[in-house]
Structures are given as C-alpha cells and as structure tokens.
Image (tube, rainbow, N blue to C red; front, side, top):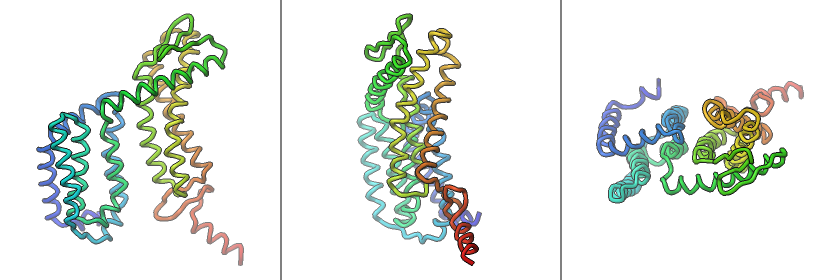
Length: 303
C-alpha cells in the first residue's frame, strides 16, 4: 500500500483523464479487441491484462525508489502511435490500431515518469503486446503451415505404430475413414499461449541468457510435436472407439491435456538447465535452498 500512497492525487487525476480520453478515441478498437478475445483461438488474451498489472505491481518497490524525470522524448513514441492510428483508420486494419494504442501508452508513460521508470516497466509493457491477436493474413498463413507440418508428423507417428495412414494436404486417409486437420487442430491456438507462457517462465528463470532463450525457442517445436502426437492418438483411438474421439469432450480434453503436458516438459527443461526462481530478491538454486542459506552452511562447515 506504500507504493500506492506515494502517488500524488494529481497523478490519479491525470491517469483518469488519460483513461477517459483513450477510451473515447479507441472505443471501437477496444470493443473489437474484446470481441476477438471471445474466439477460441484467443481466449488466453483475457489473462494478459491481469498478468501485466501483476508484473508492474511486482516492480512497485523499484518504481517507488526510482526518480520520475519527465522527458519530452516520449513524444517520439506518442507521435508514432498517432501516425499508426491514422494509418489504421484509413486502412481499416485493427492490428495497426492495436500497435497505435500500445505506442501511445508507452509514450505517455515516457513523458510523465521518464526513461528510468520506463525501463523498469519494460518487460510488462512488452508482455502487453501478447493481448493483441495477430493480423488475419499472418494468422492464416501460419495456421496453414502448422496444419501441414502437424499432419505430416502425425501420419509418421501412426505409420510407426503400424497403421496404414496416408496424407494428402491436410487430409489423413486411414483406410476405414478420413481425418481432416482443420484450423482448430493446427496447433496455433496452443502455440501462441505456450510461447507467452515460455516467455513468462524465462523471465522468472534465474539463469544465463542463453538458457532463457532455449526455454522460449523450445516452445515452438514442443507445440508442433505435442500437437502431432494428439493427431496420431486421435487416429489410433478412432479405430478403437469410433468418431467420438475426434469431436466433443474428448477432442477438447485432449487439447487441454496436451497443453498441460507441454507445460510439464518446459518445467522439466528448466529443471535440467538449472532451475532458479526469483524469490524475494534472493536467488534460489535447484536444491530449493537460496544462496544465503548455502553460504551459511559453507561457513558452518568451515568452522
């Protein structure tokens, strides 16, 4: 509460005025954004604002101690955001409007609190970009490629199991039936949340940069492989249990299970790389003891 009490009343008034102004200017953009979140592919976006607020709240001590030095340089980001708004309105492209909103918010923060505090909030602000769905043309292109790759790997797994399976595009012929890998099964709705989760885990991972990079980059092949396993299991179980395994509850449950399995693999990967979480400003190593405890143990052993 000390962090909140240190904020001057005039700052709350400015924040409220900016909020009303941005809400009015970007009303249609925000309305469409929330509508996009209701799609199955983007439901994870509902969590991003809460995550961003938490990450900023976690930095409250650093923000309180840092000195606010308002800077006119913030007009660079603000001006670029307004330019994006103009382009988005002319082109009717919502992703450009999303970027415009983000740049304007960054510019306002830069103007009023300065570069030092902006650097402290850098990761939460970058994480806020995850709440914006990809442009339609890019999303469609990635989805098509993922469908083809997942289908190919899924067929290879079924053939390894001993099934007679052949692929033509995104259609898998099992002889007794055909399975079509549609957009919902492309794996993209699991890939994006898994990347976001990987970034958050890497942020908490107290290790060398290359280890954090490995965690984030491994989310892409991990998502593709696990989705291919899901497709292969669907084909294998289809022969045993019939079409109900490719639709309804089982289809949704299998997607949830695969995502949780991917999370377990990421955590195991971090454990192997040397698991260290940020804990109250102290570093915690793989055996669960923080460095202070280990140092005390070494001193006791030396005496």
